[in-house]
Image 1 (cartoon, helix red, strand yellow):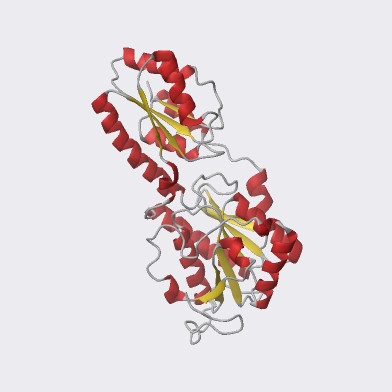
Image 2 (cartoon, rainbow, N blue to C red):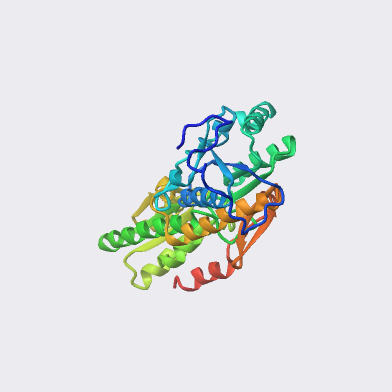
Length: 348
């Protein structure tokens, strides 16, 4: 990352003239980008897309390190096209990420806004989830700094986009673990209860359950009694199944441990609990996340050039669109109910 001061031109971009294949009616000359909250595979691809799209149009990019925590401390550097070379395949985020209690205060946001003004920033791109979008929304409301959000969270729980950056990779990572656990479960004739991420949403759990051939799936959107799993397991045993896979989203009441305890208490059968946890956040992003991040990163720069603010850039039905930031957390994004039915049908 290039070491520069607020008023220095980026050495990487000094000799690059704007390529005006997209209008810039606001005359945007410098934008900032940060990643905030939990990391998600594909964040680096989004950063790369932001930097290279901006560079293509003669716009400088300020990279903010450690999210809003770094912004209110002025931890910022100019970054250019060469700074984002060979990062598209890397998990995590080169800008680092953090959660900031200070940013939740008006004083913290005021300090961050002043740093952005000192750097001559014309707009801020926030890559993260609903908590990050709250921070960007209040910054725009209180200080008038244009903010555009990119949906970077593995939970896929933001309204206004079919998928979020990192979701596809998280599903593949969890599915790989489920396949391995199925092998050992079949060998030992055991029941595995596997907990995947999804504090408030069951998107990961549902996709993994269908793709992994699970006998049952528990999601926060349907807080059904766990007693029903006893009958399902008993029926599976009566049909000659030597092992079973149960998928539980972490946000389901009681989690995987609660489901496992209900199975053991009701059937006397031995169960094993596997909580996949943060392993789902790491790793090389799959192609779908890289493509989505690249499309949305490019669109975020264009959004600022076109004068959009306080919106999230998302993709719905293959089309890029904008959703007001408050709607991304105020409106509920439900799981695919057809897929939920499919999971039940195929588990017989």
